[in-house]
Amino acid sequence: MRATQVTVAPDAVVIDASGTVAYRGRIDDRYADLGKARRVVRDHTLRNALDALLDGRPVANQRVPSIGCYLGPTTGAPGR
Image 1 (cartoon, helix red, strand yellow):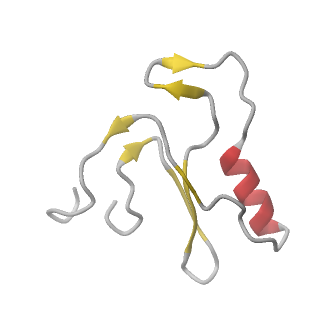
Image 2 (image 1 turned 180 degrees about the vertical axis):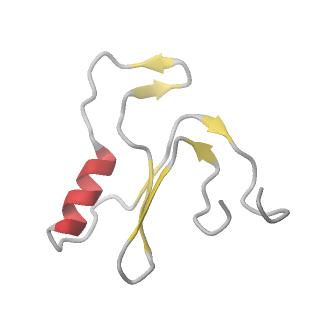
């Protein structure tokens, strides 16, 4: 958790071939807020990031906030 700075579940992290975090954030825009799901997913954010990397393009939105359960700070005891 600390290495990727994930603080919310679900939160996707994509690490490129050089070991750099290329994308961190939501999987898609299904949730507008906690407990408020959209009927139709309009933005497949994680898929777009993966497609960009596979095509050799830069990821347009490298950090996109996730909506979900708070996991706690990224600092603290190992394994937490």
